[in-house]
Image (cartoon, rainbow, N blue to C red):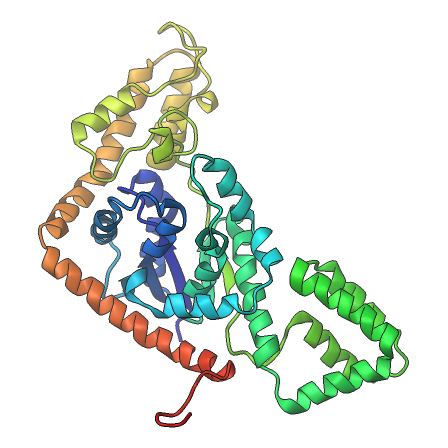
Length: 403
């Protein structure tokens, strides 16, 4: 069976070529390899933009148009809008019942975004609970793989920890629980207290060293059999019958494409080339890109690695063209406009079919909504299978007509 892959994007405006090379090309490849669920994360947009919601709805549909334009296929992947699948909110709420506040406060995104978005009031429950919604997005579909860059692996860890914690509470049968209590009694009160402190260090603080220390500590307890030691260590790690699957990070290569100014390509920096950019504007943007500051005069030699245009050649140019650029730049044999011309041609060639397909889908709003509706229905059906297990485990499932 194909592995389940889940990923989403916040609708914060038109997509650019950085998104294409960093995320979307990978999605196009993955849709042929796994059972993929790709969603427009409109609820996530509200966690930071709850005061200014103008444009979110439009951005949702623009994003779907551009996904289809780059080759995301609704016959191969499930495409849907997050808010059209209420199970995301339900699972996030239920996970909140058992999530320590300290876990949410130590998520890297929490402090990073507060620092980057100082102009916004992010002292809200929605922003603090962002990791719960993210976790629900993933666990609802029993995702085995979540595409992330190396710098995002830590953000996924809380989803793994929450799945583990949920399973530790609700995945143990009565017999296993009795064995754990028997083991704690056999240790004695002082040792049981030490074990509880180690468990807290791991489950609430994410201290992996506590697991190693606990394993060594349990081996020192004369009153415990090897089976009891194993059961207690599994209890500390939060391992139980798997109700919610722990997802794994699917590491994706970071895009080599810089922004027009050499920084990370970002709308906030104003250094992007949107997927539907006008061709003449693309030519103007690339022609006016800054280059190696050492090349003041046409006759001055340069260093490609110090020039943002070289980053574009790394993505768009053949080895032959890159060799031509390096030779010409370092010897002053070519000018900066000469260097930029192959990039201009390659970017335009890449975006022409994307822009044409985007125009096609933008002109068919009814068909676009049918795709979103069908995707949401498929997502709800899959998500409900998980929610039935979660509700039952938490004592919330009742037969009709029974109190």
